[in-house]
Length: 66
Image (cartoon, rainbow, N blue to C red; front, side):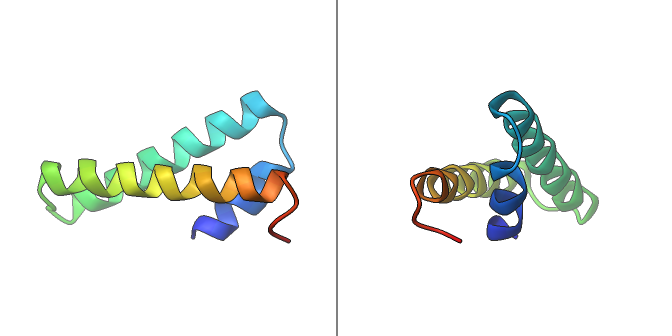
């Protein structure tokens, strides 16, 4: 999931990439809410997802991921 989002975001301009990341995080949060997952856990997981996406995106734009 993370690599898929990063590969898509790399092809976008920075503003569009940011919107894409925020939209995907929102979608993941909504999916967890539908499953009845506790909000504290959702917040933690969304934070972890965002951190992973941004770290992977940073590596990708510096030539580390293909």
